[in-house]
Length: 454
Image (tube, rainbow, N blue to C red; front, top):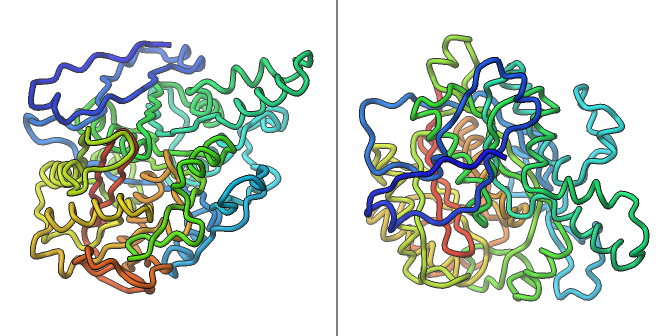
């Protein structure tokens, strides 16, 4: 494992930078690299930059959620506000308060030509979700295998399912060691990304960002910064997480899960729903995309991150850190709030989160808030934790490309604290810029801004 390069921050940066567990590794295949290629570890955007930075565009996008596999099924589901939260079948929930989640219906086989059947049988659920999303993005991009291609991914649970399987076997049949060594190896945080690298014949540095529910957005923001700093011309990035019994039981024990229905920004909201999935983007500099005549799907123009030290799990009631991350994203994009046409909110459906985010949006947007459409797509697929920021970035990309706003279809009575219009029905709209928020336990906050490509 190659240690991450240190960041040198001035005092103003230190106040707004969360501590993020990251893993910077090189797959074995990187030994084939004819020239050493090192990348700076840049998790958060710099306060100052010198000279013009390269523009960063999206040339491939893959997605897997409980709404379906791939862009087409998910775009249709999000556009119509379909709800894909159903009874859990992956593990026993008979002793839990809540028994539903956004569970993905995976195909019996991945059908990836680069993956041998024997290897595929050993893959855990999280890796399968990741590979399916990555395959779609890779095919769209037209990229070829490379020995100088960084991978930056966000996740919170990683191979948690393998850890659970190890524990069950160790408790139930402690003298049976079959498969245990493999589970220990594959449980490590970097293993899903290394399988991705091997599957697509990629060699280069791998960064894994585990920063609660902001992980996916942080990963994309980190990739964006690598490109803007000139460290590379292409990055494969995104987020993934699979449902696991321990995580589900933990959220249920916290009474964070809704016993009725996930209703973000509803006056009677009572909790979130968990989900699973993955989203992967192929990012490259605009110059690189033009040189190869690539089809461009959209552009990432801004990224901001901040830290909320108010409470371990609760956000500041006035949304101070959320306001800071949205403001930082605006500044890095060189935009003002009136230029934003849509916000994909973090909107979990918990009373405190939605109230704090509503306050942050109101303070950030000012008079624009009265006409600024906002929605949360977690009503459709649940909260995907480490994958949420990546999936919701892709939802914004869909909205920009197809010119519609995804509704929060489960809302019945909008909270009076929302002085902005919450999208509740399928809506056609002109969308040039979209902002997406991701906030997590421990005070992690991230915001990304995308621009329509025409």
